[in-house]
Structures are given as C-alpha cells and as structure tokens.
Length: 91
Image (cartoon, rainbow, N blue to C red):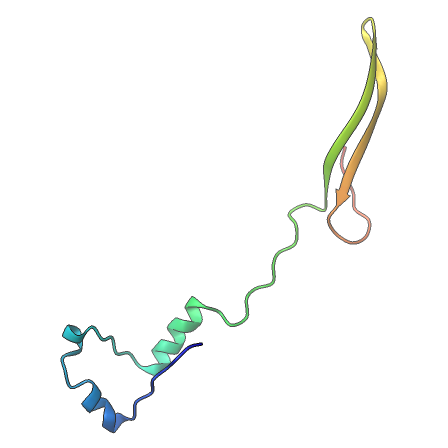
C-alpha cells in the first residue's frame, strides 16, 4: 500500500512553515515526483528475453573400443531444444 499526501496550496504554507531543510523534508513538484517514481519502478516491465541459444547439448553417452592405434565405438547425444519447432545444431 502506498500513501500520498496532497496538500492544497493554502494549507501548504501552514504545513511547511518551518525551514524544510532543518525539519528533514524534501519538497518537489508532483510532476517531478511522478517522473522519479516512474524511473524507479516502471509500471510495465519489459518481457523477458528468450534463451541465448536455440538448443544445448546436455548429455553424452559413449562406448569406445581401442584396438592398437584405432578407436571405434558409438556415442549418443542428448540435446535439449529451448524453443518451439525445428532448430539447427552444429556438431
């Protein structure tokens, strides 16, 4: 909950009769207050950006056999796609 006091000009003189610097008050025009508030807490936040990549390699399972100077086997890659539809994954 936010509370905002709005003073009529005739009452403002009574409320701020003291020196505002010694009383700890800051007095600014309502328009300036609104602009500062809008900068500090935008009403409509920007939508979150999408992921920086379309897909990511999350797991690799492999079996290798070494026979002398030759290695052979199979590898299974798990790729998580982070957006809808088809994506190109460079290997």
